[in-house]
Length: 116
Image 1: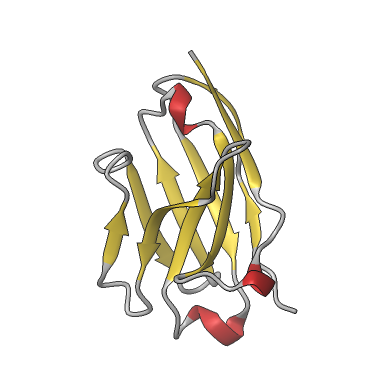
Image 2 (image 1 turned 90 degrees about the vertical axis):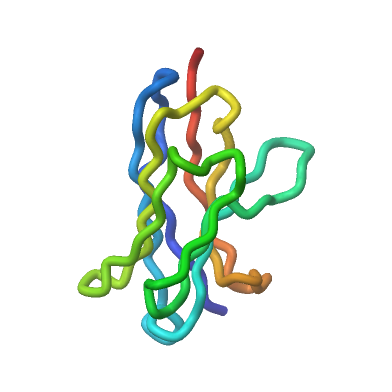
């Protein structure tokens, strides 16, 4: 079983920024589209942003366009989610996984809390 490792969450005021990091297994980093997802209690896990293996194709949920940026750090084998202009509705547990996701790859997630 392979798991991603997410980090970088925390508590921030509305309008602030956070930088999330996803450490990925070398077996998938270079060849797979990686995505960030988020989940709030009682709701399904939704895709936030994804980045293709070649780093040339990115996709964002409408709710985060213009505020979030997804990127790859090839040297560190990580996928970064830079979150700016955060809103209280961005509060969630954030996960990374392949896109589409595979059950065995879910990590523990990292919690983001945005206060009004």
